[in-house]
Length: 205
Image (cartoon, rainbow, N blue to C red; front, side, top):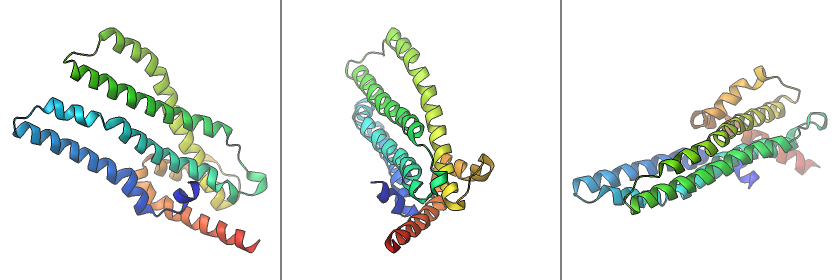
């Protein structure tokens, strides 16, 4: 799976990580607007859309974090032995936001679906309790995402320069991962080049 991410073309990843979400949002809006104009019940249409929300978010998170995972771990082979990076913390901090997004997607989708089916508003006490639990997890998730981008960007730049790097060296890569919908067009060709070089070196051995 890592090799598939690393060898994928920029337009392929862009289509999966950006194109599909945009199409999904367009479909949702068209469905709701169509229901309003045809005097159908828009709440029912929204309920139907929410049934797909957890699946959509899990797919989206899998693609985005799978890309980060592949960069950080797949390019370790390209690093010199004395620059090999410890990946334990990266794995933990990447899994935290992934698990959080999966859990919150299922929870929110289920909560709204239940509320709409029963024609009731979400219970205030439950919402307050959920907020108290979700807030620290959300903050941890945000840190995990930032750390994952930091580690992936550092790995990519170290693999390219073949020397120790400081944040100033890989700051552009970090922000391109942050704004991945633009950065993917610049970073992925460089990743493809590194992987091609790695495969060539393996064939020579």
